[in-house]
Image (tube, rainbow, N blue to C red; front, top):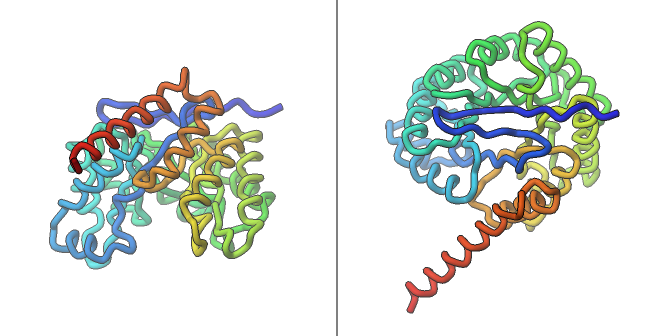
Amino acid sequence: MSAPLQETKIRSASKEVVLGGMHRFCIIGERINPTGRRIFQDQLRAGDLSAIERDVKAQVEGGADVLDVNMGVPLTDEAELLAKAVTMIQSLTDLPICIDSSVVEALEAGLSAYEGRALVNSITAEDERMEQILPLVKKYDAAVIALPNDVDEIPMEPDKRLMLVEKIVRVATQEYGIALEDIVIDPLAMPIGADTTNGLATLETMRRIRDTYGLNMTCGSSNVSFGMPGRHTLNGTFLSMAMTAGLTSAIMDARTPEVVSTVKATDLLLGHDEWGSEWIMRHRQAQKAAQEAAAAVT
């Protein structure tokens, strides 16, 4: 018998988003991240946060439900930057935030500046990482993303991933008092360009996590297509398949209409979009935008 499906609740000061197998898929907008963006990094070093406003606008308009925020820029005070970014974003939108950093001090700065109930990105099954991060998760009443890899390896086999999920769940719940529903697992979506069986291993991992624990799951949706052509088609197809296997959210760029539309269509077909209201609304918005664009040309 499958485990009951958990509900993970995260909030801004005024808006709640629920991750769960009976809810619409949660799009976590990934764009507010300087990784691989040299100009953005230079701006942040100079104290210029204006690009954040543009990124927030683009992700919200694209359909993001939550915003992932990372301020990992070399030669900066990441803790100070992250706290400023969190405060700024909360002045621009009511969407909840996923606070993303590998630096413990930065995570705490972001959590202390945040108004609401955040999602923390992330921990692994490494003992040291859990010892550093889980007390913060508990202190600030947050939820946390956890990856089933440890100091030895990123396991490719579902069996090994499930063993590490068991460790994370046991340590988080029993040693730190984290509620089961506040653990969101990243089942490790690996590039199919490196091995075409990687997608199957991830889907099997998802099904087993859902059936064994009922936990919510997320992943970096573009990881699976890395190095391959036609990435939007691959990403959208993977997400649709993953949603049937138990994936309830993804960290993704909401500026990709092809991928977002595939997610919304899958929600509808899985019965997670009551009366098709979300699908119909997006269709009407797209029609209106197309009409306005045509009118502007004439």
